[in-house]
Length: 207
Length: 207
Image 1 (cartoon, rainbow over the protein chains, first blue to last red):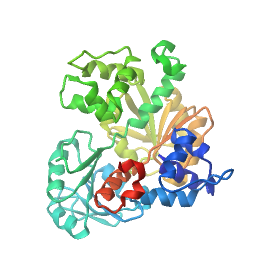
Image 2 (image 1 turned 180 degrees about the vertical axis):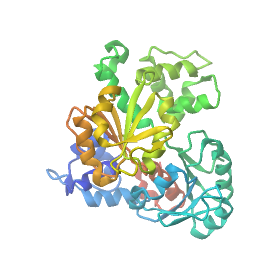
Image 3 (image 1 turned 60 degrees about the horizontal axis):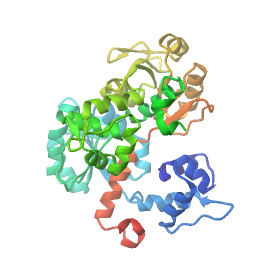
Image 4 (image 1 turned 90 degrees about the vertical axis):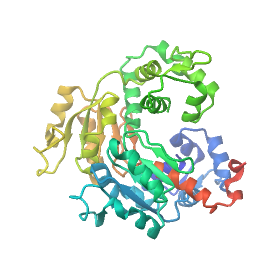
């Protein structure tokens, strides 16, 4: 959350940020910001705050974002294509090295200069480019089989965008992205404003 | 997070879930789960846990997901198209009522049975369908102008997928989706396992 907040601040070309403001953006209090950032060896300047660029660098380094992470995307539908040229990936060090699909009509074509390969080439690409992270954007029905294959090929982190639950061995990191999560947060606020919720069902949070 | 965890559990066809397990999935402790859920008037059965379906209903209702939320998507590139037929939206009550684009070659064509309309039709659709939530999937350069137009048309919640910062008046809810967020979490664990981080830079968290 700090990284995300700082990237927003950097886009506004603000050179410094106070712990108060960063706390507000990240949804915590200023004391927590100062404590968390002290682990990075960073202490803001009283009355000035933190240097945005330097703090961005420190947090990025801590998260492993200052190094290059080759990534493969499996499943080149609309979402896979959108992610193939998502600027946010490259800015954070995630470089898409190959796209894969099982559809023979797609294999051999290109998205943003990246050739779509057949799944049979997976093992070779993973080994050659030293890929450890895969993005799974297949339809739900194909997700588990593809995940198994990714694991066999040596992938150790999978980001699952397929709308289904996928199982992987314990040594593999798996995270699931739910694109409707943020919509749910918006609808909660909409509903609350519309007065549909009674004060009592909100309980202590409405205090 | 509770909703997301419960949806995963429901897909596995488990009828009940313990506060311990739900706590583990949501990243909190069991006491917090029991306290949070007590605000919904829900208390699990000792030795059995919570009824998954009923708890899902209660949380969905609290979040406003048991009602129908008409949504418009503006910007029909790959991401907009992917979201237009994203199953996760409809399952949570978000019904895409219209797609909009400024490209005259796209206007009049359809994605998954939804016609792409010109931005000039925005005000009429928002008023007719009672739309309060818009999903912004334009390129970065167009995002602010479109956001302004959405606000003028009466939209009060915007979910911004465009890779840029957008400003809205204070009464409008705005949330930004960063598709690389989860990749960053994966790379952090990858890096830590690779031993690139020294124990000291992790500070107290490595204890």
